[in-house]
Image (cartoon, rainbow, N blue to C red):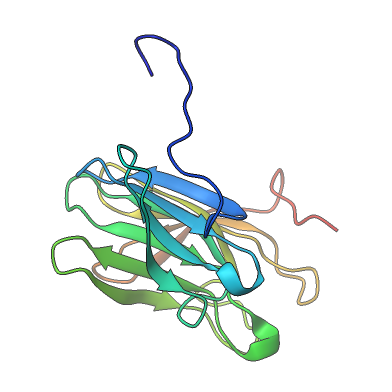
Length: 170
């Protein structure tokens, strides 16, 4: 609580076994990405009641990582790091809270190429509604990590930064 400094658990256990990302939508609901074997997914959490509602499960998302809200449009974006062993590319997904529909904004190559991105990780939405994303890169294909700006309307991708001081862990 911002006023009292109290900390309370709003949801625990169940589907949220390894949460990686969290954001608040303009409705006040929480959106959480979770990654752990059969519990991969994106979940909506009601902070008042503690209810956890699955929005996407592991059949729809391989490696849910980042989640960010565009407070102007109400869209929720999720970065999926993909699973190249299973031929599932990294993707940027968009959830429309009004229609409750998911769409793919952009997908990377399933074969391990690098364009438009290799493997998305954390994301944020800037004041213009563009998604700022970390592309983790890979040492296997000698692809450096990059900081990208993705326009979700035109689907254009611009590299904001590549190389040092960003690096791919060994």
